[in-house]
Length: 433
Image (tube, rainbow, N blue to C red; front, side, top):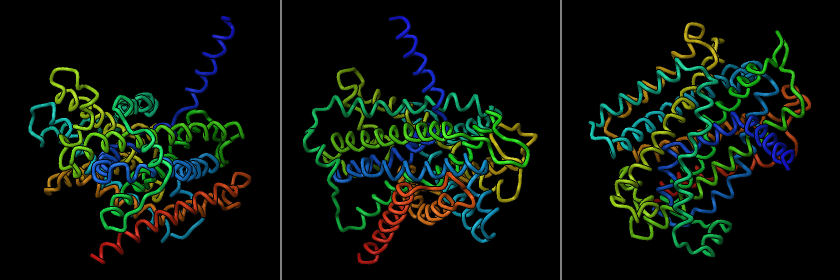
């Protein structure tokens, strides 16, 4: 019996050690922008877009697996691979897209964290915005990657509150099952605007670049590199990467499903169809604490802690992925495993992107609305980048024996066409109005 228990503990410990870039990427996927976008779709359309959480999983997993595989096999980030095998125009195009999208997303996330913190801390919003920005920069620049990764793995637990809330509410489970597996469409700008945001905040450009580069970081930490040679990898290493990636994406979509269900059941069902503030979004968690005194404050507290924790998770991922892209393009030393004195350019880009994101918060845009707009921008920007990723991952000259197989190609190309169609439908319905 003791041997059996010991064996289970050993297997579970080995499983936990596998989890790394994939889990972190999946957790960062449900950043404040994700929470706001999923909350808005639940409030506005009820269960109408719940099916996206199930349908996106295989496509999100396939795209992220392709990105991770590119990093693992080549020992380089996506931009570095583009620089080696494609023209300077393609490299510049990819870098501009990810830097612009990420910087807008950083600004939206910073504003959302400050707005969430303001629900429970009676400090002026401006001061909270500056404090969060300073804190995340100091942590990212002066903490080692290994130390940061250990924290990042567990910040995703903040989203459990939505799942618990969804489970304790008296839900119409048959209706939920139907809404989860049968797609529903409405031919309106509002519907396609939000669904583009849902796709964009789930299958996001920053995730592509971040996971590929972090897989390279993992290889460096495990000393799989030799000078001027690609990493020494095995099929077992690839299998571990895929497990890590799959677990991260499943966790991400469970959180997505729970947020949509919770907001649909608590906000949409009571006539709240538009989320205008962090306080509106926090109301979705009130059923979790309804039996306690000060239930409204407790809901705000749980919501705030979740958004703040995920903000600390997501902003470094956003700024880091932008910096990886720029640094790879201009041959700067890069990596969160490096000290500041060895990677001035890398940390300089992180600082500049974060500070520009901070400035965005002082142009008068509502933080919650900014999050949804950032998600929509990601949905549009992701389309050409997915095309590029598909070409790289399928190229035998680049990937060798680990090039994309038939299933991977099919899933990634479907993702490309589906996201392109959503963005196009959004534009068509916009001009018809």
